[in-house]
Picture (tube, rainbow, N blue to C red):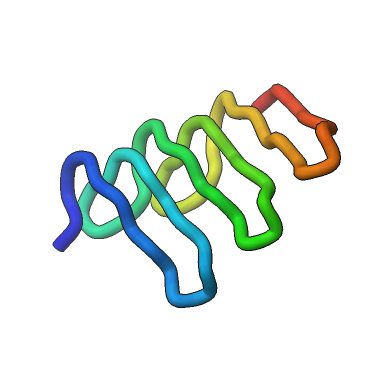
Length: 65
């Protein structure tokens, strides 16, 4: 069971680095998408939830909740 801080590499070529709680993304972390986009922010119960920033490969970004 994943709990605490760690990295998880997905078979589809994506990566999560951050906090885990009871085998779910929960807390602060970064999610690296296969297309190069990066989400940095809060997760709750395996979903993006709360303040965060998404950076797209084309240099666009969004900061919000």
